[in-house]
Image (cartoon, rainbow, N blue to C red; front, side, top):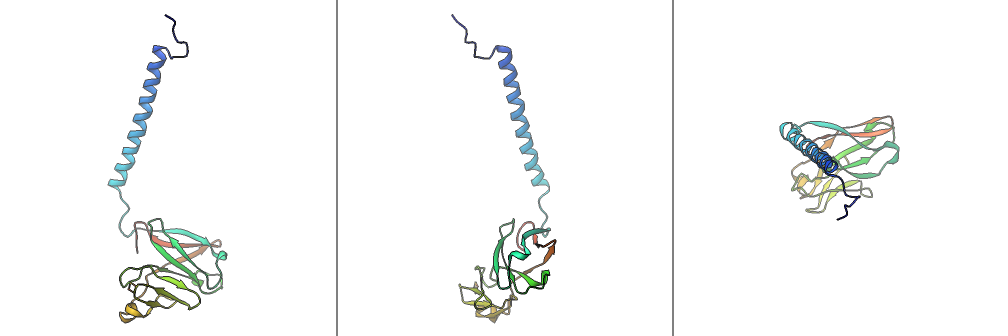
Length: 161
Ligand code: FES
């Protein structure tokens, strides 16, 4: 009987098995440790962080963008002036305070509109018509800052502020 020369010898096969087992255990324990860390030290409720939104000059007065935070919250960022400061911008929640539908910016009407019950908000987020107007509700506002020409927004790590 002829021996296959391409097959690993018994000693080499044993080494490869041990190496594969060591790699497998390392990956498994690493994953387990990472999961245990997230379980033991979850993001604290209310913990905030600054996230990059865009290059400030990429938006002109009247422009709007729907920004999605790392937690999946959509925030409408509008530029309302061009003085070169963070106060040119406004970041408002896209979630209607009435029943949670998504509002959108209408630049031609200079307002936010909620299609669910015809809710209307000013460009500053004040409810002026429909159920949000009747209840004097506002769209929640998010802090902004500009650093070296880049626009940043403060958001909660785990979700809505
Ligand atoms: S959910 Fe927006 S007006 Fe009702």
